[in-house]
Amino acid sequence: FWRARTRRVSSFCFAMAHQKVIHLRDLLDPRVEVYRDLKGRDVAGRGELFILEGENSIQNLVNYGKIPLVSLCVSEKRLEAMGALLTTVLGLGVPVYALPQAILDDVVGYNFHRGVLGCGRKIPTTPLADFLPREGPILLCERVNNLDNVGALFRNAAAFGAKAILFDAQSSDPYYRKSLRVSGGHALAIPFRRGGTLADIIQAAKDNDFHVLALVTPHTKGKEEKRPLSIADWQPVRAGQQVALLVGAEGPGLSPEAIALADRAVTIPMADDVDSLNVATSAAVALFQVTQRRRTSFSDSRRRRRRLLLMAGLCCGGLLVALRRRPHRILGGGGN
Image (cartoon, rainbow, N blue to C red; front, top):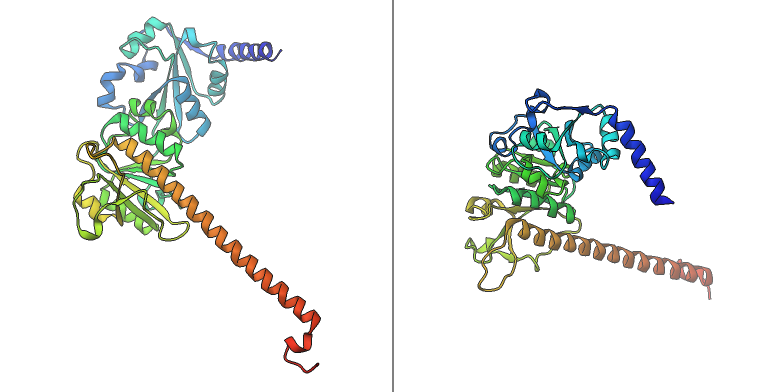
C-alpha cells in the first residue's frame, strides 16, 4: 500500500514539475553556458558562480538554504526520478533546464552520468572578526591545495561536530566542483571562509578565546615549550575550552611560523616507519580526540558540581535535623 502510494505521489510531483521544466535542444543555448566545458573551466573559474553535481549535493543545498541556487541542468531521462526535488526547486522560482543525455554530454564536455548539475552563487565573504563562531571546535587551514583533501576536510568536520573551517588565501577554493563532490555536500552546510593570512586567522581565533592546537608530525623539531604533545595526552586547560585545530598542506605540513603562533603543538602517535598521515585523515583523528576530551571534561565538571550540591544538601539537611532536636544548643542559647 505504502509503496503504491509513494509511487503515486512521485508521479504527481513529476507531472506538476514537468509542466514548468524548460526543455532545450540547442547545444549552444546561452541559458546553459555556465555548464559548458566543466573540466576546463574548473581552472578558469566562473566568477561568483559555482557548479555542483549530483542529486544529493543539490538536495543538501536546498535543505540548508545558506547558498542561493541559480539554475539546474538535468538529463531528460532523470526527470521522473527527481520529481520531488524538481518540484521543490521550481517552487523556489529556480529555472530547470532539461536536455537529452547526448546534448548534455556535449555541453559539459564528457560523458556525464550523475544526471543533474546545479549552479549556485557564492555568498559574500564575511569579515574575519564577525565570522568566527562562539563554540568550537573549528579548523584552521594553511596552504591546503589538494581538492580531494579540501572536500574530505568538510566531510570529517561534519562527522565530528566542527563548527567552521577557515582557509588562508593560499588554500584552494572550497567552491571547486570536485571539492564540493568529495565533501558529500557538507561544504554547503558547514560555514567556511577563505582569505587573509594565516597569522591574522590565528590571532582572530585567539581573540575569540580559542585555544589553538597545531597538528604536526611526530618528528617536528621546535622550541622546548613547543615540542609536540601526543593528542592522546592532551587535556583542556579548563572545562568547556574552545579549540581551534591548525592543519597544514599535504606535503610540507605546517610552516614553522604557524607552529610558533599556536598555543600548543600536538601530534598523532604512529608506527616508527610512518612519519605522517593525509591532512584530512589527521584532522579526523584529532577532531575525534578533541571532542571526546571536551565531552569527558564537561562530564567530569558536571559530576563535581553534583557532588558539591549533594554534600551541601546533606550538610543543610543535617543542620535542619539538629535545629529541630536541640535548637538552643545549636544556636548558642541556654538549655539542658
